[in-house]
Structures are given as C-alpha cells and as structure tokens.
Length: 113
Image (cartoon, rainbow, N blue to C red; front, top):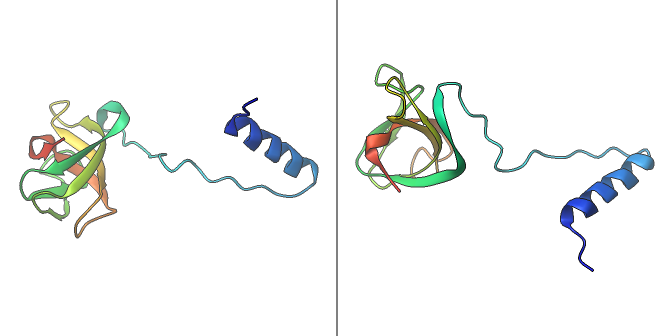
C-alpha cells in the first residue's frame, strides 16, 4: 500500500503538535508574491532568455527606474504579464548573469522562450 507524502506530513505534524513541541513549516519554494500590475498570471512560471541587452525595471514601462541591465542571453523566469497596454511587460526573477536573484519587469518584446 502506498502512503502519500501529504498524509505523512500531516500525521507527523499531528504527533509533534500533540507532544507540545513546536513545528515550523516553510512556505513552498515556488511561492511568489505577484504584483498587482499583472494583467495575466501563468499557471506555471515561464523560463525565458533575453534576446538583446534590456533594462530590468521596477514597474511595467520605461518611466520606471532601471534596476540593472540584463545582457543578451540572460535567464529570466516570468510569472505574469501586464503593463499599460495589458500584456507587453513580463514580471519575474533573473536566473543568471550579474543581476541573478533580482525581481522586476522586462519588456516582453525582448524575451524568448
């Protein structure tokens, strides 16, 4: 008989709670706080690369502050799209290069899957 990992986790939590011990659970690694400026959120993150050098910005237009420049071929995982025209900017996290780990907005025209 197969026991699901969710069942095992719940049973373990119940035993620990019953013993008076404290159990701290971390959020899922995929948990991402999506900005309100997103018009459409993907069910699963999209991995992309930049097609040219492009600015990573604090918001979905060129009027927002640049956080850094992503060189051509930089990895960028995006979780949603939005912007003044609806879907021309992608919000996500830089996965390679000098700005790895930073989150921000990139013009969708400069990304390729």
